[in-house]
Length: 107
Image (cartoon, rainbow, N blue to C red; front, side, top):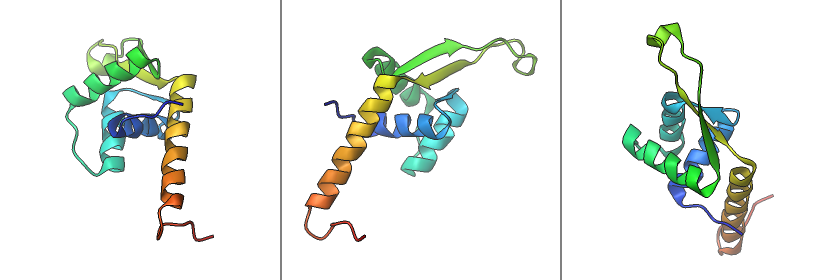
């Protein structure tokens, strides 16, 4: 079993909410929305590099677009391993919450 750090969990969750892939700007916006905390691009890109090294995210350059003056964007995508690590982490949180007195599921 693999458990993610909180920031890794938020980034992978944001990617999932963005249909599994995104470039930096929409991803940053979704991370801020989820965490209710500001994150600078440098921190986001450093965390994405960590997730790439762990095999949870891939990156590839898009085709150049005329809107950006011919520059391409880097698209980040969650991998199968990333989805699995996120699911295991979310299940662990659920198990802990349900095990702590006073937080039992009310269904």
